[in-house]
Image 1 (cartoon, each protein chain N blue to C red):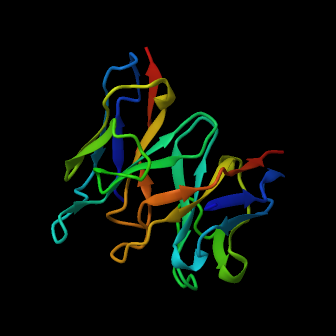
Image 2 (cartoon, helix red, strand yellow; image 1 turned 180 degrees about the vertical axis):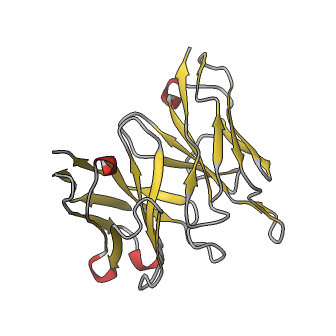
Length: 114
Length: 124
């Protein structure tokens, strides 16, 4: 199974500042035949279900603000919140779909306001 | 409105059974592979089970629930089920139903639609 390791476990960022979350996979999730990385990011606000933010490592889901961006390839990925807003307080998870089943998630990163 | 609505959770004693349901609306359920993902109190996300689109010939389980849980679908009723037997305290959590985006090259892709979850509590 592919293991996903997120860091940090939590971070506190001032409003308007940048937040950066890392996700490392235990093996590459890049498929050379289509040049795609099989990695997604989710946001889970308190008391709510997860919500898809990004897929193919960098494609924003419809309706997701452009302050959210995904980058990386192979085994190292980053979710960046360009200018943190109060409504971005949440736990963020990465997920691989290169080899499924099983679907595997990272442990989550909690983002708070400093 | 496109949505998933879970039901069937509750309090059950260790060793007991529950059957969760996930009712889909606003889209054609048969087109999508469907999944159950659980979240223990204060913990992260754990994929539990998935079922292929269409008639659901292929079913998949996490090692932690293999032989204990059974996933099924009834497209005519727009519903996915999770039969949970021999429940253990560690099965406690919020169980989400989630739709997988259709991708031919993988069995289960990213999860683009989630329900609000149904709470399962296993306790004596």
